[in-house]
Image 1 (cartoon, rainbow, N blue to C red):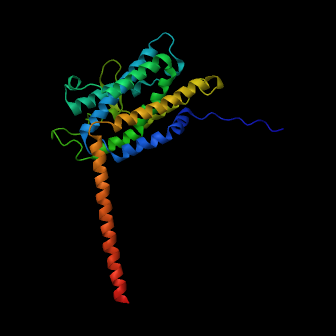
Image 2: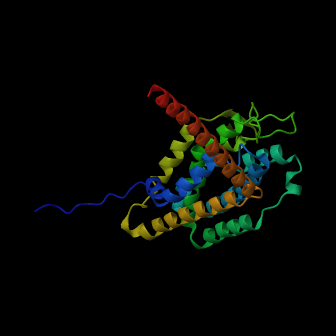
Image 3: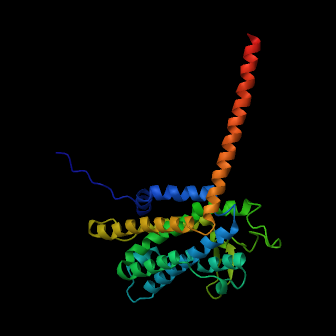
Length: 282
């Protein structure tokens, strides 16, 4: 008699990627087109500001849970202090807005709703916070690195003031994509860390949460999947609705129309000449 087949529980990161594949592809298309990087730094800094508040709120809630006497074991297991990005966001925002950026900026309504959502699930379904490291933070190593490359290579990204340069030894404007080791006795950041090392550390923690693959924890695991979908949906909404983004879409449509017209004209010229040559041969 054949033994009953056992369905193996997939790794958490693989399961979340499968559940969010459609949204993930949509996010990738936005990043790859460079709609908010190459064309207008003012659009990029708006998005950067929104994600600053989102990361900051998440990290505050995570720290609050870990400070409890008996923190949720899933949250404790997936915590990686190397991943904290709040200070890096603040550094980039100072670069793009100036030293008084905190006085001249504030979260928009969509970001405020997102922040409220994070605080709400932190109280009612803390396990859903596990979805953030597997989406926002792992995203830095994938789509985020594409964005970083576009920012650094673009010659029109930050046209003024001319004395400012992206990158360099101080990670100007790209600090959120750079990981450095930190002296725990001070706020000084030292040498760059290998991003692949940190990525693999985070994935390893996410995929080895104690008891997450048991039948008893199916409902809590499903909560993480639902939150991952929520995160992608909110992230896409924030990027797509930044002020000036509609102009960017219009510009891309115009570019597409111009290139299509040029292609049609070349087609007519080339094949017109071929047709004339064939007639002369006859």
